[in-house]
Structure formats: C-alpha cells, structure tokens
Amino acid sequence: MKNRKENIKTSRYSEQIVDRNLLYELDKIDDKRSLRGIKDFSTMKEDIQKTIREGEPDEVRKLSRMFFRYTIYRRMVLYLGTIFKFPYIVTPLTNKWEDEEKTQEILEKVDRGLHFCESVDIQQKFADITTRVVRDGVYYGYIIRRGNTYVIQDLPVEYCKSRAKANNRYAVEFDVFYFKTLNMKTPSEVKAVVNTMPKEAVEHYKKYVDGETKERWVLLNTDNAMCFKLTPDEIPVLSGVIPDIINLYEYKDIELSRDQMELVKILVQKLPVSNEGDILFDPAEAKAIHRDAVQMLKNTRGVDVFTTFAQPDMMHLQEAHQVIRDSLTKGQKSAYNESGISQMLFASEGNVSLEKSIINDTAMMNMLLPQYEEWINHQLLRRFSTSDVQLKCMILPVTWYNEQKMLDTYMSLLDKGYSKIIPYVATGHKQQTLTSLLRMESALGISDMLEPPMTAHQTPGDRGRPEKETDEKEDTTIQREEEER
Image (cartoon, rainbow, N blue to C red):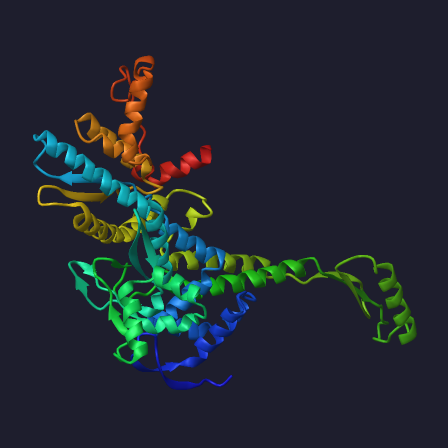
C-alpha cells in the first residue's frame, strides 16, 4: 500500500497533515475484531514508534486500546488501575456539636452524603475510571440523577476535550456530532440515548440539526461533568512500552521455532569412497540404500534421511538455543523496564527491589486521588452542605500492597486517641455500617459474651526486636532469607 498523506480534520477538528497509512492499517486489524497475532504489528513497528513519539493522543490511544487485548499490556494497565482500594470517609466540618438539634441535623447530612457516595459506588467506579485513565490517558464522564440514585455516565473520549479549569476542576466540552455516529432509527433508541447523555448536549445537538448554530462543541455543566488525567497531554502512560512488547512477542516466535527445530534430526548416510576418491556404489545402489533407510525410519517422527558419500552422522538443527533464550529474557526485562513496573510483580523471583518499585508506582497513581476528592467534595458541597455544616470526603491512600502497613499506622494513632472510624474503613468496611454493627452487637449482648483480645500494645512480656519490614532490610538479608525458604 502506498504511503498516502492528505488533509483531514481530527476528532478535535484542528487542520493538520496526518500520515494515514498507519491509521488505515490499524483500522483493518481492528475491523476484524480479532488480531491475527503480533505479526500484524511487526511490519508497522517503525510507524508505531513514530506515532508514540510524535502522534496525536487519539492515535496513541488507539494503539493502547488494541494492545490492551494482550496479556502482558493488560496486566500492566490493570495493575496500575486497581492499585488503590479507595476506602473513604465522610466528615462534617462544623462547630455546632454542642447544640443537640444541630447534632442530629449534622448526622442526617452525613448519612445523606454517605448514601450519595454509596449510590455512585466510589470504590468500584473509581477503580474503573483509573484503569481507563491508564489505558486511554484521560477519562470523561457526567453524573446523572435518577430518582434517589446517582449514576456516572461514561462519555466517549474521542468527542470530548478539556482546555481549561473551572474551580480547580477540568471543564469539559462535548462534540455533538457524536449523535450522528449512532445511527438512531427508532424513537426508543433516541430516547435511550437522550436519557443517558447530558441534557445540554442533547439540546445543543437539536439546535445544530435545526441550523440555529454551526458550532459543534458545547461546554457541559461544570457541576456535573468530570475529567481526570495523569498528564496534561492525555497520552497513555504505558504507551512507550508497546514497541518492547512487539519485540518480546517476536522473541517468543523465534524461541518457539527453535524449540520445534530441536526435535528435528537428520540421519546423514555418508557412503564410502576409494582412496582415489572414486565412488564404490553406483547411483542406483546409493538410491536403494537411501530408500531402505527412509523405509526403516518412516514411522519415526522428526527424523529425515540424507544420503551422501562418507560416514553416517547425526546432526541437530538447534545451535543457538541459549542465545534465543537470553534474547527472550532481555525482551521481557526491556518491556517491564520501559513501563517502570517491576517484572517480579507478575513472575516473582525475589524481593530485592520490588518494594521500591511498588512505592514508585503508587506515588505516580496517587496524583489522581486529589482530583477524585476535589470532584466528590464539590458534589457534597452543592448537594448537602450549608453555612453551618460542610461535608468533606477523604479517600485513604490504602493500596492492595500497603494495606497492612497503613492499618498498623491507623491502629497506632488509635492508641493515642485518634479516630476509630479510619481503621474500620481501612479494613474494607463501609463507614455507614459501623454504628449499625455496634448497635446490633449491643442488642444481642455480644459485647458481654466476648472479651476483646489483647493487642500487641497491651500484651506484656514481649521480648526481642520486632522483625523489620522488607523495604528496611539489606539486599543480602533478603537474598539469604529467600535461600532459606
């Protein structure tokens, strides 16, 4: 196919010259809805590398979504996207606790705020949003109220953009041309779409169709729209690892071919010759000898016969097996090193640098937590807060990897008179269930039947220095412990 270039308008509708060859080839693969293997990409490796370096976010996003089908890239994305557990607490900021009537009002507002967070399903939805941010580079959404519940509606990334901030939150613009791509044919289809999309976008689309406006972009309600991203350029953070993944699959193909060749053997029959170099068997006799050997080995898989004039010998076709395995190992390390994620997370061979790698990954993904908190607190402020009471939501920085360490920290603060709710929530329980659980236990008399166990801080007679955490130990100590296991 010729390398065609033409003037086009991207989904952001800015005039530019774009190399259409790569996008055309990607569309051919994508339209088949099943990739024929990494070989489809190997022929486009240089174009892919150029796209990652210089391409528009939409082009890089397309690559990221396609490679999300492959296990190694999917696991990297899901690892970063689900690293946080997103436990949260809702706290009222007020000085009206002495007033009994106000106290009851405050607690009712907290319950309403917790009901809102539960309705949105913060923990599950934010894990999904974070995964999309890692895969796509950005997430756009819109909160819609349906009766007493709230739903976050995903918006198509290709038809959204954010060029400014409003009250420390990204403002979202929507391209109403999106509705033309849906090919809605029946009133029920139109109604279904209208009920799930922002009202201002639907109204603007009607004006666009009626010719009242030529502007395709409309600014969505900044109170309801949301945009979250790790980097301003909206480039998927793991896109740089894609060329290394292509190399890794190429190494795997080569290794598979080598493994198959290892089973292939050739029996070489070297027929004798005289000292003067003359053949002792005529061609007919040599042919018969060859035919007999073939007949004898016809049921033996992976063995071929080659007849010549000399002594018989056995040849193996695999001579660079170790070289290929070394290349495969290098390819795996290169893919993980480019992503910045430790390979030991998925195929653990030691813990020497694993702890530090997880800390670095957590620090990067932690950039999203303030954005989430800002959006939630704005929702609580506009829906439930008053001049006397302001609700605040705090997402605890608890991951699947630091859960125990954070819980120990919260428990040590509890011994000093700090919050009892935070340790409870950090274990994965919901804040709104704490009071009900305690009251149920009190009604059943469980607190009188069972005595609380002694904690480590209360148990007398502890001796010896407590064992250090893995990240506090020397590398040699970690290696010795692994050998002892």
